[in-house]
Length: 483
Image (cartoon, rainbow, N blue to C red; front, side, top):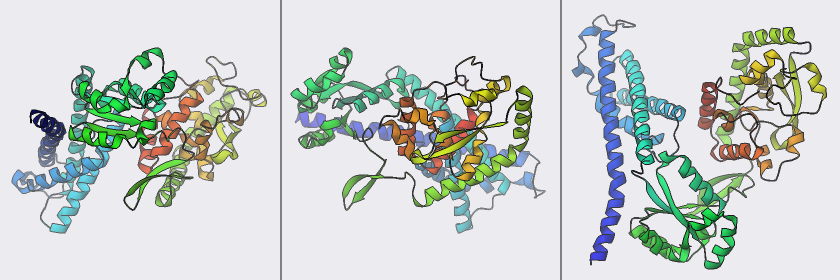
């Protein structure tokens, strides 16, 4: 009876802790929305700008207070939709700002829609503007503070979920490295489990000596080891995921309140983009040639057309200045065109501002190094700030490139690709990509670039493209590796 009571207590406790945490987070958001509402009300009543009603100072808080509960409810729903309550993920300030902007905008849209449908509220449009600004600023600030507190606590070992990785695979090692590099995820790997005694001997050959020491046993002992080590979660990888003998053990782990997750090792062998669907009640992983289909493909191309046209129009004065500086700096053409590998390996001529002496175009392509004598004075500046890439807006307009996608390489390097690297050719190349958005430039290995490109392939969406474009603009002048 005591064992049963202990099992029930552990299971209830495992469910209660996240509930208390998310309940506290929702309460914080309710307080933040209340403060934002109060600031917006007093700002609209105190700032004499853009008011059409001369008696705006007479508006009392009691007249606007009915909007507050609707705002709180819609904000919670919107924040849940944009995953602002998912704090076991790798956040950065740019991503938080984007999610907050989308979440607050969605919440305000719901408030306006509710007001229109019910005819209940008579608030001013100026109040809504102030409310949007204050809610966005306060929410972003609260999330940043919370994020820093969580990182600090988890670096101290507080609130970490201790997990076992069942299965010796590269994906398991990559996951452990990700947990170690990103304490904000809130996970600590206790150790690994080999699939079988034979599998342990074979699999650990790929492990270094320190890695092999962390093999605590086999999957046959999964439940016993998880309980003895005080694991709060188990992650299945490799052949362990396909073992039918683990199903009863998984049910037992659930009964003990131990979380179970799985990582298919398909990302290393999948020839195309993966997606998830169901056939009847059976979950199915599927592959398709094009990551985006139907409206998303149309939306991406529309964004490319509009963005390239607006970019060429707005940047025309900058193009003129750069062209004059290039001509004054060294003889030769303003633009430089080079054959690159496009989608599915199709060749196209990619445009750039010329950053080297004209004679460099006659030599085979060689990676530029620091203090390269071929680079002109103005060329060094436009390469460091990526201004030399702006003429590729013409390639985007022609449909040879996209605003966002893998960076195109010359065939000299493409011909050296392994089968894994060639997967990045499935997408239309872009002016910027996930790697560039995170500041990965310079002499980065092709394997490292491919990892970012495959991550982009798996997650590709219109929203991700917009976030990458925003991050690229934010980090535009921060590159130190480019030369």
